Length: 117
Image (cartoon, rainbow, N blue to C red):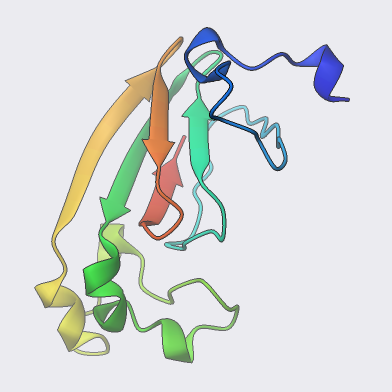
């Protein structure tokens, strides 16, 4: 329940009302697909490290989302892009960074993102 996991100090303001909270737990070596969510995200690292790739919504047409198996996702994995199969992905600009224990990252709901732990 939400009472068991109070939000971190920076997002405990009256202007922020979380719609839901999800706790993702991993021992490492996991990866998400490139995707976007319908809600704002605040990624909080309790322990460990993650590499995060962010793609602005203006590049959505080059993520090949229309042919993805699941809505809101992309069939392209940026670690091994097949430019013959997905040539428009070469037009995608992304920001990549690493977060560690105690870090927080805000991901706007329209941003595409992919996470490696």
